[in-house]
Length: 176
Image (cartoon, rainbow, N blue to C red; front, side, top):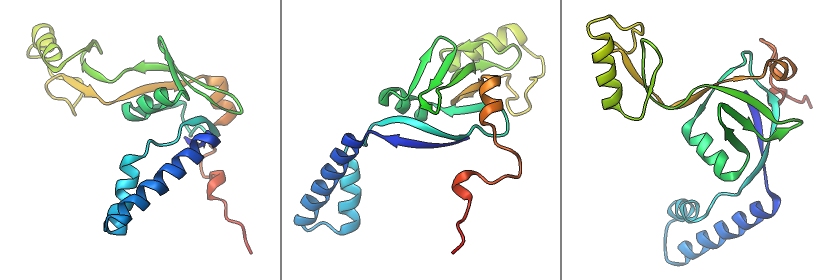
């Protein structure tokens, strides 16, 4: 997937002004430029994202979204979750994904989700005991997912999918 995040212009200007001010203040106190830049970044709230411009959705409809990206997108308002649907506010149209699996603990045998490790461990031991785990990466029969596993609407994926072997728009080079 290749998206270009489009920032709110007014908020981007605010971010720029605050960051310059924080860097100048730190520099005035004798801080090194590197430390002033780091401090300026820490003291400044990032600009809000208005929407994402879709370049392509990848070669497969399946997509994983990190919990960090989703949390930030929801906070900024360009990602919404409604039931089993995750929507990216995008241009030229919103991308609508079905959430197949959510972050958290789960049983490898039947996919049942749990709020914590202890619940997954107890359930797996109780119902599947000595059975070999179906997932070689999780030999105890339970695992932890740190992302949302999603599948894009088939019509949208057909419309925006990447063609294997083709360059993404941002990778095209202009010759002199």
